[in-house]
Image (cartoon, rainbow, N blue to C red):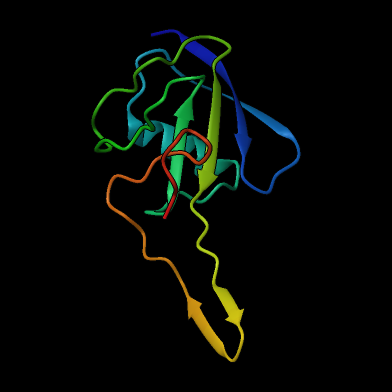
Length: 112
């Protein structure tokens, strides 16, 4: 099998990383390649390939979709921010719970 070069942009990393994976790589092989580069993949991690709207959230043995030579892989994390609202003599603090099926921020679906 031939390999393809992919470029990786990861959360909190200013540089663009690159690695090679198989042209018919699985989700697990991508996760392993990210771990070698020092990028942790867990339940709070979202992986998007190029400009595809849905993130890669399949099982490790399933094949990657949309990966080709020169693809950009975007690795992000869902942030939950505690907020406190003060109004007159009342305060209320909240930490949003993560919703099932939450998508990429800025695409019309909040991350929490």
